Figure (tube, rainbow, N blue to C red):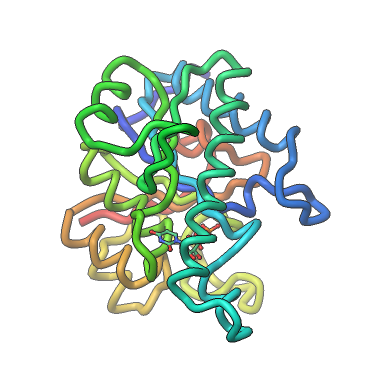
Length: 240
Ligand code: UDP
């Protein structure tokens, strides 16, 4: 079946854990290669892709600061650096799969990668390159979900695809409520009134205010980024 999509440009948000090995080791080359192949197929289907990857496979600032030795802002700096490491690994996998990709970091690291700026990022996307947006928002006390929504709004993306452990947004946690049902489509306001957790509060508020659609789908096979974006795998579309 030919793959068609309503999306011209999408920001794909992957959690750091999506890059990890099944045994939890923080980077798994076959998984990286699979993600890169998937992005290559999405591009073949006519979708321009920007990527934001988290750092939770290595460090989350809130967690590491709980022990009391490292303060939250420093822990978050470590977390942002973890996202740069993940982004560089993903960039490498994309280039190996024949997809031109560039990492741009919100935390300036000029000897390692480009520093994020909106106009050059738009230019790369317009040329058909994948931009891997590293370093989150560049500020502590935020998450990469917020970075994903922020960059999607800045870079004129049609939607954020939040690739998660489940294939959409359910009426209740499907692990503990076997009768929970998946929403195909729901509005931001309905998600709030039904108390559905889609992203952290800051990220979701920005998506709602920016009237940005969010696609929630599973990162696990047989779902894939391309299948979700071309309507061949289940997902939930959250719309204004
Ligand atoms: N982080 C931050 N500011 C940002 C984005 C991320 O300080 O704008 C830090 C924060 O410590 C966070 C960590 O980087 O816990 C990794 O990001 P996140 O938790 O969003 O990763 P994910 O859960 O998606 O793997």
